[in-house]
Image 1 (cartoon, rainbow over the protein chains, first blue to last red):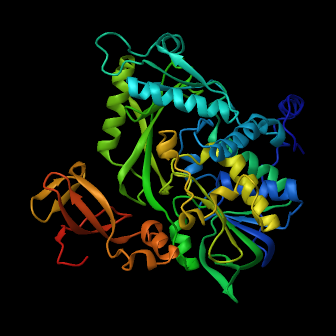
Image 2: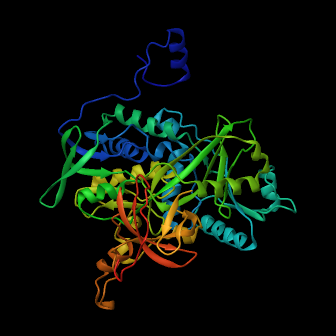
Image 3: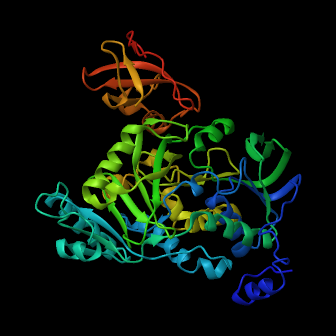
Amino acid sequence: MTRRYSALSLLKEGLSGQKGWQPAWDDRPLKPRYDVVIIGGGGQGLATAYYLAKTHGITNVAVIEKGWLGGGNTGRNTTVVRSNYFFPESVRLYDLSLKLYEKLSIELNYNIMLSQRGMVSLAHTPAEMEMSARVVNAMQINGTDAELLDADGVRQRLPIHHGGPDARYPALGGIWQGRAGTARHDAVAWGYARAASKLGVDIIQQCEVEDFLIEGGRCRGLRTSRGEVRADRVGMAVAGHSSVLATKAGFRLPVTSYALQACVSEPVKPILDTVVLSPGTGTYASQSDKGEIVIGGALDRVPSYGQRGNLPVLETVIAGLLEMFPAFRQLKLMRQWAGIVDVVPDSSPILGESPLPGLFLNGGWGTGGFKAIPAGGTLLAHLLATGQHHDISRPFDLDRFTTGRLIDEAAGSGIAH
Amino acid sequence: MQIFSCPFCGPRPETEFHFGGEAGNDRPHGGASVPAQDWAAYLHLRHNPKGAAREIWMHTTCLEVFVMERDTLSMRAEPGQALGGHA
């Protein structure tokens, strides 16, 4: 029976006909009672379960998922990880995440294929160049790595970028974050699921929340499609559908749901070895390990729960990409899809206890929840284990919408989430 | 390209329209005497329904603001209705 992944176990299994591999996580029935139940079997929910068991020793935990693990936004994002934010609160959050990502493959004994290939955010105008210098300064002061590139620096890192005299979007420079990169999104969900399951967490798929059990003004558990389950504390990590569950729990959130689309081209030989973002054209791209160009852009401007995406935004994204990289005109798109994301007025996440006591929130990640999975999991686990905020999660409490202490990253870093 | 229907100009491409928020989200009256909770609710809290929604939209070419009933899951949109004094 092979549980641990290593070169030796690969060799052993190769010699013995691959018969000893075990399922990565166990399929167990839903028990009637847990210490903690987590709604949502995406990266955030599974990471929460893992850190509850690993850091806090709470193993009587269930993760319930209405579909399959990582089938929502965890499996729909463009796999970019980075921490190039403006405000100190955000950098602490996203840099914690990046640091955890850096050792995650070893910690989970699961290859998440982290590739810190660096990311360049292009500046096409003098005004964007000034904003880039401001963000680089802020990032350095906040203690994360950032470098201001000039036009030559961009040319060196992106030789295929069209920056000639007739270019519509020449690059005057940009922001470089060398520790940014990509990670295999499914592997992050599966790696956390496997590690959590090994520590005793029950992972229940095909189990939908129908209602909250509310007694004495407190959340005591859930009614699900597989029966009732009781818990001392309930966590919710269902970004895209946060408002749907909040309505069942009897409160509203500062969230509007929008579709965020992405697409991939046919696979080609290596041509793009960094992540490139162009806020000016609303486009970003990277090349996957399989060779596909992975392309994303801005939100559709129509509130939506339909996981499809509309044509005008796709057209804008592709037009921007082709202006910058004319070589990509030959590519054929293979797939296009969309995920539903929680958009919050200040483009920062919501972490903390909900208006229903006993129910704790992890959501509001907008277009950028994947990069935050290790940190979001760590912080929700802390909240569920102690009932108190972690220093890093406190600024992201729901109360900021009443006190007015917003963390407006859309205005700060120019990143639209 | 989805087609939305402005009550004044008729069917037009979705790119001509701007989402203005949920209908019925009335501004609290009373200025400084309104509690912070109520201002926060008006400014930020949303029903954000999955399915049937009643929304305020602006047709950015004629600048008229109107009500549109839409399904946020199927994306089916009913023709816009002129504001009858109160949304």
